[in-house]
Structures are given as C-alpha cells and as structure tokens.
Image (cartoon, rainbow, N blue to C red; front, side, top):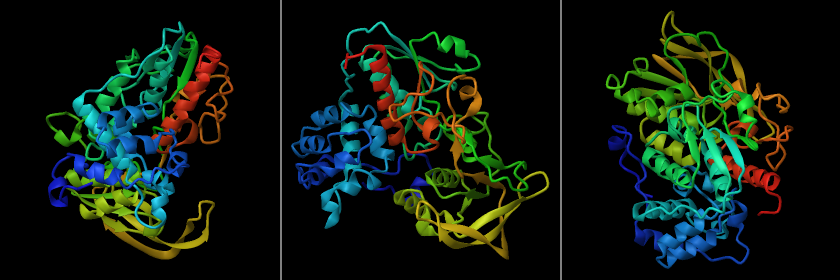
Length: 449
C-alpha cells in the first residue's frame, strides 16, 4: 500500500496507508497460485478461505470476496489493517519461498473497504434459541464472541465499562493505523444482528456477579488493561504515563484537542518511550503527532524488536530516535520529569523465545533529557472482575485459565482473548473468541450446530 509522506502525516491523525486501487488489487490477486493445500489457511487463526476470496478479487467480484471473508471473520477491515499477516498466513504462502508472498492482508482490507463503501450486509441469524448470554467487554474478543453467538440465535448482552465500545480498537490503536469510523462500522454490523450493548456498565461493580450469573452463560472478554511498570525510582513523578493511559487520553478522550476537550496530558517537548512492541511504536508515533521529539529506549538489539517491521519503519520515517541495548534505571526530577538515567545492556544467553537475555553493564550509564516518560512494557488482565468470580481458576499472572475450548473451571463461565493469554494480537483474541462461542453453543443447545 502507498504511504502518505512522513512530513505530512506527522501533522495529523489521518490514516498513513492509502490502500490498494481496484487495479492494484486485481493484479496482486492474480499472482495467487490457488494451491490445492493452501498453507495460508493453516496460518490464519480464524480460518478464512483465503484462496476463495482472492480468486473473487482477481475476477473483479469484490463484494463476493468480502462476503466470503465475513463467513469466518466478522472484522475484516480491522484485521486487514492490524493483523500480523507477515508471521501468519503470508509466512506460509508458497510464493514466499522464491519471491514475495501474496499480500493477503492488504487484499483483505481492500475487499472489506469496498464492502463498507457499497453497503454492509448483516450475517444471517438463526431462529431465536431462547437463551441469554452475557459477554463482558466489547474489545475484539467480545465483539467476535457476541457476533458468533448472535448468529446462532442467542440473545446477547454485551457489557462495556467505558462510554464507547471497541476496547483496544478504540482506546489503544491510534487512528492513523486504525481509523475509528472503520471500527464503528464493523461494531455497528454486530449490533445490527440484535446484540444489545450496555455502555458505562462495570461488570463486577455496577453490575454484580450475581446478576451476571442469572444469564444462561457468561463469556469473559475483558482483555489485558492492567499496565506493567518497571518499578524504578521516579515513577510517581508528574509526566510519567503507562502507554495505556497515554493512548486512552489521546484516542478516546481527545487530549490532542485540548482545551476543546478537557483531558490534558503533560507538556510534551521531549518524550521518552520505554519498550519495543507495537504499543511502544503507537505511543511514540502519537507523541510525534503531538509535536514532541521522541526517543524510544529498548533493552535489546534492534533486530530483536517485537514490533511489526512496518511499524518500526514508519516510526523511523516520522523522526522517532531509537536507542537500543539500554534500559532506564531511574526517572529524574523532583516534582515532574526532567529526564531518564539509562544503563547500557549487553546480550547474553538466549531465552526460551530465542532472543538474547539483556544484562546491565556495570557503571555504563547515560542520561536522556525529557519531560514525559511513557512505559510500554506490557500489560495483564485487570483483576477487578476476575477476582470476584469465585470458582474460576486463575493463573500466576492473574489470567483466567481455560481449556482450548474456552471453558473455565466454572460451568457457566467461558473466557477468550487477552484475559486468558495476556496481551496478544487482535486476531488471536478473535480466534479464541470463536472457539469459546462454539463451546457456549454446544452447552446451551447441544447438537444445534
């Protein structure tokens, strides 16, 4: 896809990628070999029939392509933008062995965008089952679970603690990567299937657990909204944010438009972002759009960055400075942040993922000046609700323990997404939600599927 020039895009929050033209989409789709045993399908967590929808695009049947995708994926425009296809379906494309793999994600986005422009059609819903299911959370796992359950004829009530649905799609991923009108359109399609959405309802607090258990089943999809911190001196200074809070203030509460919206962030002339994943890149690129000079500090080497290569490339193009093999030791300042003292790191033995374990180099420190520090080093499940669910087994990290089918140790409660796995990708949360929804259906109406 074509990218807008960096010097123009850092001045606004408009989408960076401009997408494919119909001609480009058909030309790319024509490259597909239509394998008899397509590895790309095996690499898709939601099992899209990839050759089928690509064949439709090659033939100019764009609406048919979108309909084909939507039989397995209720959020194709979102997935086409944020799913890491390069390590999933595209990685298993046979063409990738000798040349570039088919750009499956870009073709999925094209088909979904064409459908949105020409008119979305709600999936067919089965006859009313007479069963009621509570879905807790309206992020990617909650949305998909609600949609899958609604298709089976169940009455679904989706509880959301915030004033807008979408979870990380709304408050986490910036609009220059995932426009909010795209998110709204795909959520609205789920609501059109008869899903009831209750905003500003905090399950476990304003909605007691006893009320939730009156439903025939409860599906937890509360995500991983509890930020982790490094535990270093200075974290309580003004100007220190978790990436969750910083991105929520910008994406959901419009702090970029202060004082029109009364949700300010600390003054930002020099921002230090700690971390190397996609969330760190989102925070760094957002801070650039707020007019700040941005330095990203990562404790391993650049080749070890867990963020998608495209996000790292975009961040560099937009002027984010990268300092690798370094880690903050303390945040400087008396009342507010004035900088960060970092220590150099050396790479030692490999960990279980194959990445080198960083160890500090004694005495090798340096200082970075800054007035805002954003920590993007991961997050885990929020404990507010899960600790109220007696009879539900929790893991060491506070995650809900489930089987592969999404069933918990409580006979009425199921779970999917980051609340079970910890912070992961949108598409993996969706795949888990589909499986959990199938399990709910098997319990509520045995044999119906």
